[in-house]
Image 1 (spheres, one colour):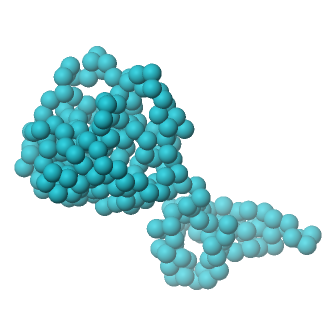
Image 2: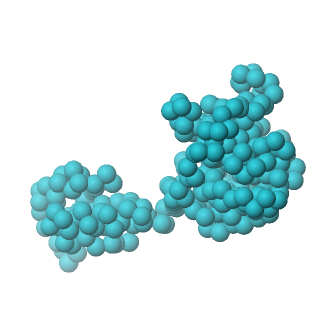
Image 3: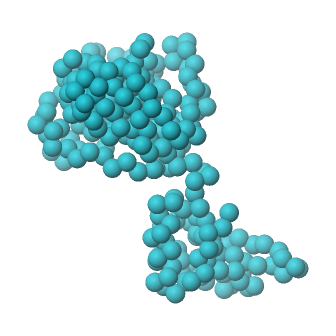
Length: 250
């Protein structure tokens, strides 16, 4: 069972598909529907924008698609489909592996990764899924869901359904990240000492930034970039270790 729950993904681009790279020529229905019904719904969090899968534009089957990397709001009604066992274990557009037993999805233009709420308008079932791939490139379809998501939304047998898709957690952009300045020192040695101490307390990058002011060089110890969700925890850690000058700086 643990093997089935490993996070994976789909394919870099469906245009790159050829039957030679898959174990089967035609997509098929996986098993373990009971397992799928017990899977927890993903927690929608803002993750860093993926380094892969987010070009400004890309081309599939002669058609050009634009990626809305800075998109913060999105809601659309249209047809959803699903993909299954044929693509299990193969790469998604952002380099992960497709897992038919995870709640993921492919979208033509949303930034990766993003979390969306998909509501089946025929039965009102709703589910959070994580978008980590590109597609579907079939006419009149707005989203391609993993088999597991289709099971939970009640259209795995029919193959398609009319759904509403709403983005609930877009990825973090560079402008969303913050930097905390812990101290400014006239001597570089003191700054490096604090840098080493902080590097043992936080997982984010700790660096020394040199600035000249009124003829004096200041060595500023900073932590960043920091995701907004991590900022309260980092500031609390600094206070616990007697660093009281944790200021958010541009």
